[in-house]
Length: 548
Image 1 (cartoon, one colour):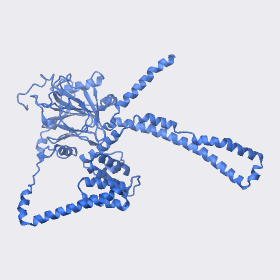
Image 2 (tube, helix red, strand yellow):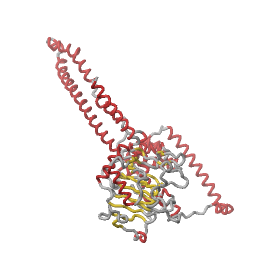
Image 3 (cartoon, rainbow, N blue to C red):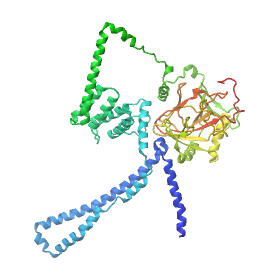
Image 4 (cartoon, helix red, strand yellow):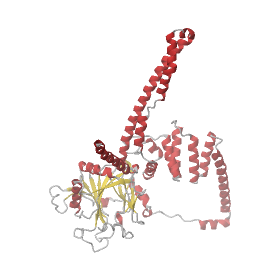
């Protein structure tokens, strides 16, 4: 009875631990750091599966030995059945085999060796990714394809920049990606990935997916993009393989009808153009083509260009005014003898980078503290005033306080010493790990005039400045970009960047609108400190002009 009382709390703790682990591992695809746990889960399952295979092989070996033995015996007995059974021992052994031994064999064949494997699989399944994870990872691949202008074949063959572990996609993989795009009514990507799957089939790759299925998806997705002639061509190819395909036969008639209708409309238009009386009318209806200015390029395109390393608007003249220096922040005692390395990254807005500002030991400690607490990153919803998840922010984050670990307190003090700003009113250190194609689309860190209650609950005013630590190098992608000014800052492990979100007057600096580019290859860890207005009255006095 005593032992039962002693064990009960242990089981409770174990159960709580499992529940916490489960809740922490929602949305696997949003954090590469937590996805690593899945590799160990899969390794454990492989070991369990091999144990099962070994048990099955042992069972089959015993059955095979029994079969070989009886095959030899039967071959001898059948040659002279009466003579064979004339021996009393043979007669006895026949009765024994049929009455007992065959029953034992039946039990052996029916014995279940799957118990260990199935039990382990059932336990581990609760930690498996969900359909949402699979869909999220697929959409991340499509996002990377668009942002970095990668063709389907490049992704399928695994020829990505900076990869260490090259991986090929099968026909089934391409087909699955196309299906997810199709279910999202994304016919552009449906076509790309169904065409890639078809290409790999034509090259001789074996697959359970057949050409008829792929051609069916291809013809429909192309039709939905308005290319009826191409849709008809793929439908005809499908019917060559399966003449009885009901939907394809219906589509064939419909596409031919639509093309004929389009042909007649073009002929009528051509006749009207030949008529001199209609030429003046046609000229009036034609709209002049507008020239597109660089300033009118949509923000999304600017953002993607900067992510690819294009569209940087730093001129040689401006570049010549950027410097690097040893920095002690007005003779701060901690940095007089060992000043920090500071370099200018951008002039307007003024962005500086501090080099070798975070050690490897500090980085590993921060990750160690944050990893168990990582949750899907949220954004502030201006409509509801509440925090919510969003497709444009794909990462997981955790908050670390100074009183939890002396190292965090030390890092907070370091930021205060270098910026000269008060940390008591700043938000806690936020640690973020980006997932598959992890990104944070263009946003402001500060609250705008149309969001007067953005940080009301904190009571510390607006976010005056941002301090961002890079805790990992990224093989490809993952830059921090400022689309409005054409700036790009690339991750460099152990460094930090700093900028003011507000002018000295307290007005927001709209040029600080920034984004985290999708991670193409690698694992991106960052941590940031959002510094607020309160407590800075004597540290950063107000300016007279709006943009001071």
